[in-house]
Image 1 (cartoon, helix red, strand yellow):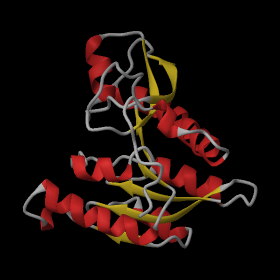
Image 2 (cartoon, rainbow, N blue to C red):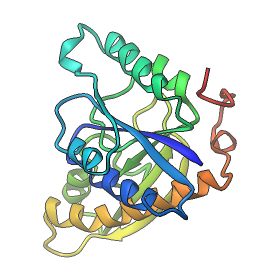
Image 3 (cartoon, rainbow, N blue to C red):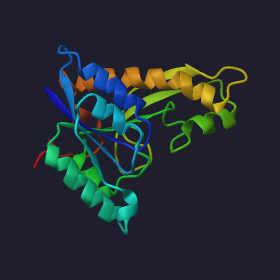
Length: 204
């Protein structure tokens, strides 16, 4: 059984999809803890499923590195097989990424390498493109530049607002995430997707 820690900053819709999937006895993965960098509304999803939560408030630390060290310490308490960034709106410090990779994945609401960064949906609308998408990647120390695990196109329709497009991307993102976790549980080698040598496990 693949054990997962999910890290969030917001409403946690992707988290909820994972929690619902892992409630199925046939699904070979379980969310064992959910962490956040703030009092995120999405923590209520975890509580509703009886999953423990932890908080490492970014504002409580004097540097990103200090926050990252505290976050990593909390993640390691749970000794997970996989860490999922699900709307965590903070760049992890390099030391944290190096410690967790390649068992560290992220969702992104664009067809990478198109429109990386925190405003992928807005940037797609502003660019006037006729399609965007959703991607699941292995996290590295770039901004949405890690190896792509899976991605899917989503059409941008005439008159779409940022909200309209994002609402159509979200279910695709959730489906891809649930399938990716299933694939990892069934033996997908994340290390083989990476372009540099990586630790075999995030476990100490």
